[in-house]
Length: 123
Image 1 (tube, one colour):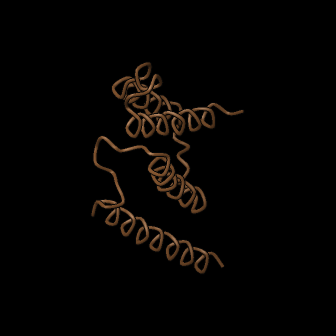
Image 2: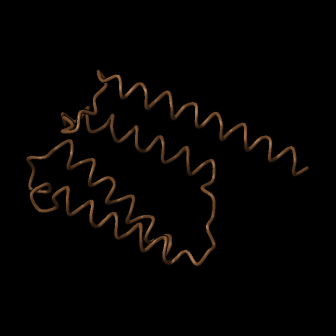
């Protein structure tokens, strides 16, 4: 397995841990891995990921972007349904949730149009 893939998986795992820690702050998991520690680890992982890129930056594919978007919103929904309450105010009753969903939808639409345009130009 490539180092970049391992780093991407680790970044996703610690991002998930940060979400879980925010929604369930009074668990043993949150006591072991504090938000500060998770953020420091995430920053280090992102810096290592960028440093080991060797100038071969690959644009995130449309499928990966859609997958990450649905993963993040899905994680938000699942943690709320499990009884968690966000400490930073992420909730379905918040206008921020609807604003984020609308912005993500518009961005996905933009990426879809851009991909179609590139496909037509490539032919």
